[in-house]
Length: 184
Image (cartoon, rainbow, N blue to C red; front, side, top):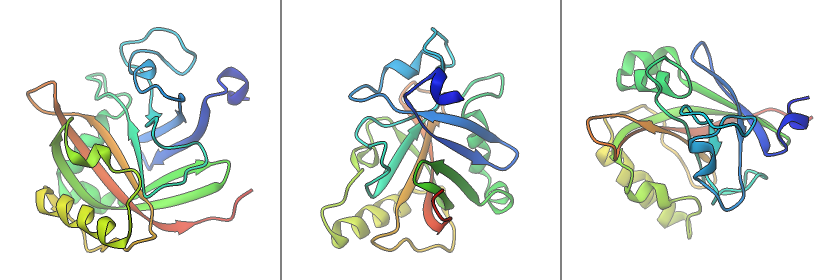
Protein backbone atom coordinates (compact mmCIF):
# COMPACT_ATOMS: atom_id res chain seq x y z
CA UNK A 1 0.00 0.00 0.00
CA UNK A 2 2.78 2.46 0.89
CA UNK A 3 4.62 1.71 -2.35
CA UNK A 4 1.59 3.04 -4.21
CA UNK A 5 2.06 6.31 -2.29
CA UNK A 6 5.79 6.54 -3.08
CA UNK A 7 7.59 4.21 -5.48
CA UNK A 8 10.94 5.32 -3.98
CA UNK A 9 10.14 3.24 -0.90
CA UNK A 10 12.90 0.63 -0.51
CA UNK A 11 12.45 -0.72 3.00
CA UNK A 12 11.56 -0.27 6.63
CA UNK A 13 13.90 0.44 9.53
CA UNK A 14 13.13 -0.37 13.13
CA UNK A 15 14.88 -0.05 16.46
CA UNK A 16 12.66 -1.31 19.25
CA UNK A 17 10.76 1.52 20.98
CA UNK A 18 12.56 4.37 19.16
CA UNK A 19 12.72 4.11 15.35
CA UNK A 20 9.98 2.75 13.08
CA UNK A 21 9.97 4.30 9.60
CA UNK A 22 9.76 3.47 5.91
CA UNK A 23 13.02 4.24 4.10
CA UNK A 24 13.20 5.91 0.71
CA UNK A 25 15.94 6.17 -1.92
CA UNK A 26 16.14 8.72 -4.69
CA UNK A 27 18.49 7.88 -7.53
CA UNK A 28 21.41 10.33 -7.80
CA UNK A 29 19.93 12.64 -5.14
CA UNK A 30 20.79 13.02 -1.44
CA UNK A 31 19.13 16.42 -1.14
CA UNK A 32 15.45 15.89 -1.94
CA UNK A 33 14.48 14.06 1.25
CA UNK A 34 16.41 16.51 3.41
CA UNK A 35 13.37 18.78 3.20
CA UNK A 36 10.57 16.64 1.77
CA UNK A 37 8.42 14.08 3.55
CA UNK A 38 7.56 10.55 2.47
CA UNK A 39 4.84 11.86 0.14
CA UNK A 40 7.13 14.41 -1.55
CA UNK A 41 5.67 17.44 0.21
CA UNK A 42 7.94 20.13 1.66
CA UNK A 43 8.79 19.42 5.29
CA UNK A 44 11.54 20.76 7.57
CA UNK A 45 11.72 17.28 9.10
CA UNK A 46 12.52 15.72 5.74
CA UNK A 47 12.44 11.92 5.68
CA UNK A 48 14.66 8.93 6.44
CA UNK A 49 16.60 7.97 3.29
CA UNK A 50 19.30 5.68 1.95
CA UNK A 51 22.40 7.32 0.46
CA UNK A 52 22.28 7.75 -3.33
CA UNK A 53 25.54 5.76 -3.69
CA UNK A 54 23.89 2.71 -2.20
CA UNK A 55 21.42 0.83 -4.34
CA UNK A 56 17.90 -0.40 -3.67
CA UNK A 57 19.14 -4.01 -3.97
CA UNK A 58 21.07 -3.39 -0.72
CA UNK A 59 24.43 -4.48 -2.11
CA UNK A 60 27.62 -3.00 -0.72
CA UNK A 61 29.70 -3.09 2.43
CA UNK A 62 28.17 -0.09 4.19
CA UNK A 63 24.60 1.15 3.84
CA UNK A 64 24.30 4.82 4.86
CA UNK A 65 20.92 5.99 6.14
CA UNK A 66 20.25 9.62 7.05
CA UNK A 67 17.59 11.31 9.12
CA UNK A 68 17.21 14.66 10.88
CA UNK A 69 17.53 15.04 14.64
CA UNK A 70 14.23 16.80 15.25
CA UNK A 71 13.65 18.63 18.55
CA UNK A 72 10.13 17.20 18.72
CA UNK A 73 11.57 13.68 19.01
CA UNK A 74 10.79 12.49 15.48
CA UNK A 75 12.96 11.16 12.64
CA UNK A 76 16.41 10.14 13.98
CA UNK A 77 16.41 12.26 17.15
CA UNK A 78 16.32 9.15 19.36
CA UNK A 79 19.53 7.71 17.95
CA UNK A 80 21.37 10.39 19.92
CA UNK A 81 20.51 8.31 23.00
CA UNK A 82 23.16 5.86 21.77
CA UNK A 83 25.79 8.23 23.18
CA UNK A 84 25.19 6.31 26.40
CA UNK A 85 26.51 2.75 26.24
CA UNK A 86 23.75 1.64 28.64
CA UNK A 87 21.19 2.65 25.98
CA UNK A 88 23.03 0.54 23.41
CA UNK A 89 22.94 -2.44 25.75
CA UNK A 90 19.15 -2.05 25.96
CA UNK A 91 18.76 -1.44 22.18
CA UNK A 92 21.52 -3.45 20.48
CA UNK A 93 19.66 -4.36 17.27
CA UNK A 94 18.60 -2.49 14.15
CA UNK A 95 16.16 -4.25 11.82
CA UNK A 96 16.11 -3.35 8.15
CA UNK A 97 13.45 -5.00 6.03
CA UNK A 98 13.55 -4.75 2.24
CA UNK A 99 12.27 -6.72 -0.72
CA UNK A 100 15.20 -9.08 -0.14
CA UNK A 101 13.98 -9.91 3.38
CA UNK A 102 14.78 -8.83 6.91
CA UNK A 103 18.35 -8.20 8.03
CA UNK A 104 19.34 -7.60 11.63
CA UNK A 105 22.36 -5.46 12.46
CA UNK A 106 23.96 -5.28 15.91
CA UNK A 107 25.47 -1.97 16.97
CA UNK A 108 29.24 -2.14 17.26
CA UNK A 109 30.30 1.55 17.29
CA UNK A 110 28.91 4.98 18.08
CA UNK A 111 30.93 7.91 16.78
CA UNK A 112 30.76 11.70 16.66
CA UNK A 113 32.09 12.94 13.32
CA UNK A 114 31.94 15.87 10.95
CA UNK A 115 29.78 15.61 7.83
CA UNK A 116 33.02 15.52 5.81
CA UNK A 117 34.37 12.43 7.62
CA UNK A 118 35.89 9.71 5.43
CA UNK A 119 33.27 7.26 6.74
CA UNK A 120 30.67 8.93 4.52
CA UNK A 121 32.71 7.95 1.47
CA UNK A 122 32.74 4.28 2.44
CA UNK A 123 30.03 2.24 0.74
CA UNK A 124 32.15 -0.43 -0.95
CA UNK A 125 35.59 -1.61 0.15
CA UNK A 126 38.28 -2.45 -2.35
CA UNK A 127 39.15 -5.70 -0.56
CA UNK A 128 39.39 -7.30 2.88
CA UNK A 129 42.34 -5.13 3.95
CA UNK A 130 40.46 -1.96 3.00
CA UNK A 131 37.39 -3.12 4.94
CA UNK A 132 39.46 -3.89 8.04
CA UNK A 133 41.27 -0.53 7.73
CA UNK A 134 37.90 1.27 7.70
CA UNK A 135 36.77 -0.67 10.80
CA UNK A 136 40.01 0.14 12.63
CA UNK A 137 39.71 3.83 11.69
CA UNK A 138 36.15 4.13 13.00
CA UNK A 139 36.93 2.19 16.19
CA UNK A 140 39.80 4.60 16.95
CA UNK A 141 37.48 7.61 16.87
CA UNK A 142 34.44 5.94 18.49
CA UNK A 143 32.79 7.18 21.65
CA UNK A 144 32.64 3.47 22.42
CA UNK A 145 32.52 0.10 20.72
CA UNK A 146 30.84 -3.13 21.70
CA UNK A 147 32.37 -6.61 21.80
CA UNK A 148 31.49 -7.22 18.15
CA UNK A 149 34.38 -7.49 15.70
CA UNK A 150 33.08 -6.95 12.13
CA UNK A 151 34.55 -9.31 9.56
CA UNK A 152 34.92 -8.79 5.83
CA UNK A 153 31.72 -9.94 4.15
CA UNK A 154 29.49 -8.71 6.98
CA UNK A 155 27.49 -5.73 5.77
CA UNK A 156 27.51 -2.57 7.86
CA UNK A 157 24.56 -0.23 8.42
CA UNK A 158 25.26 3.38 9.39
CA UNK A 159 22.55 5.61 10.83
CA UNK A 160 23.51 9.29 10.67
CA UNK A 161 21.94 12.37 12.22
CA UNK A 162 22.90 15.93 13.10
CA UNK A 163 24.31 16.28 16.58
CA UNK A 164 26.47 18.89 18.29
CA UNK A 165 27.13 22.60 18.26
CA UNK A 166 28.04 22.97 14.61
CA UNK A 167 25.93 22.38 11.51
CA UNK A 168 28.63 19.95 10.37
CA UNK A 169 28.54 17.78 13.54
CA UNK A 170 27.04 14.30 13.19
CA UNK A 171 26.42 11.27 15.35
CA UNK A 172 26.63 7.92 13.60
CA UNK A 173 25.49 4.57 14.95
CA UNK A 174 27.07 1.68 13.08
CA UNK A 175 25.71 -1.84 13.11
CA UNK A 176 27.11 -5.03 11.62
CA UNK A 177 24.91 -7.64 9.95
CA UNK A 178 24.41 -10.46 12.43
CA UNK A 179 21.25 -12.19 11.27
CA UNK A 180 19.28 -12.62 8.08
CA UNK A 181 15.73 -13.85 7.90
CA UNK A 182 14.55 -15.72 4.86
CA UNK A 183 13.33 -13.48 2.06
CA UNK A 184 9.61 -13.43 1.41
